[in-house]
Length: 597
Image (tube, rainbow, N blue to C red; front, side, top):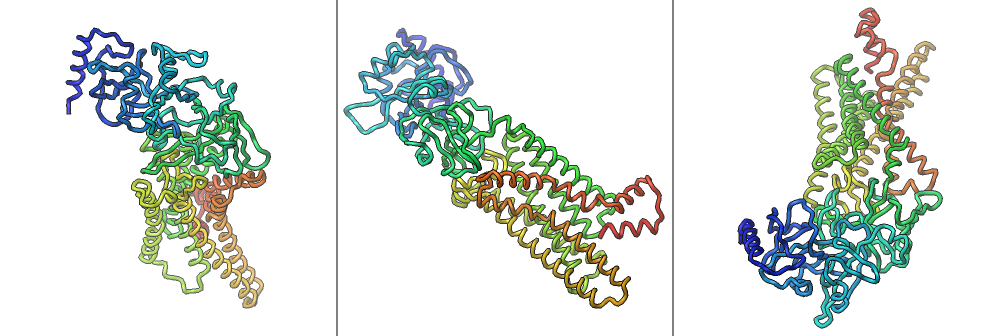
């Protein structure tokens, strides 16, 4: 293998003794180059070697080749395929073995690209002197076109490709359909970013059912986008792309139509963990991301985070986590705060760099799973304390520490196992593509790709929270059933009016507490499960229901604060703690005893 430095010296020497003049021959300064197989925009070549230009430089004179050296163009899927055919090199006049030439691959800065297939004679007549070309009475300067050989089986009639670059007005004024591509020419999604991979092209057959009168004759429109893309929660039956490139879709209610120049959709391939997936992505307009709905959501979630912190501080500094219930509430608030705080940050900055993006995505997943785990612990402990017909276990410190240990084992290890399992699946892809967990790919969070045939979100989020909700409901029903039975027994057994009243009051208080816990134990998340099965965007009324439930979820921290902290006896204890008021020691003991239950 010849070293890079030696090759550059060799090229410089050849240039110094070569008298021939060729428009594409490179005579500039030495460049940083490499011989590896990564794709770049510029290449230095002669008939023996190919070097990739790795510097971020701009050249005025270059050979506009559509594919990298040693590749030809495949017109069906608009991709580059490896080929040892040198006919394009010969036709472009690069015959001198010793000359060094500069090649620019592809049209990555072009907005609209139109392909034309030419035979050899037409190809030669179009090229002229290469500085500019003229095709069908239009002139295209250097950088606004590229040429290459076409990969086919014919040995007698070689074809060449001429790709021309237009502005976005082409799609408005011409009859040829424009299909919108997310990444620049020759690039696809790898993770959340576009990377040069001209071997994959731009196949659109996967979406032929939503494109009216689909054919492979179309222009590629790559729009300079200002919006954030997302996977649409729309079935193919509810979206149509017309011959003029405009899109029509419905998310409930009347159909909405946008012309081809609106920032509404684009197609692209995505490569992740060796899975190649065709994407149809749609735009959330920048105005929508900043409208009152999104700002309100951020404010409410931030308020919930503050409420979680306030609740934890009360249970640490006032109750000093003395009882098991104190530790349960503290752990629940800590888990929810982790999920809510991370999610709030991602709403403010939805596209942090890697690996921060993936770390935050897994942190959100862990936080919410831990929250559900501690809700289950809370519901179990509620049933154990209020609803169990068995004799109560002793409340000595050793027994409570043992119970707390078991609760922590479940509350933290279960979500840890789910998150770690999801991480390894995301990294090593040991499940089929339909169950692959996409986190930090296009977006930081665990992605919903049901319309793409992927159920990773269902497996790693929906199914675990469904199990947790079912278990929570069972404990709640058992608790309420016991309270109802106990209430009926009090009515039958109490002889004095005063005893009956006190007993019913105690049971009523317990029932009310159970009801409040039921409201925050994640039942409203059941609509998240339903929305994973059916689309709430099908009808206007269900869209508003989904908005209401999402907002309700954002208030979780506020609800917890209202249930566990915002009570007169707790407030009174806090005021006494900070010597705002003075109460007797007997009153203080009574107050803490009643509020901690």
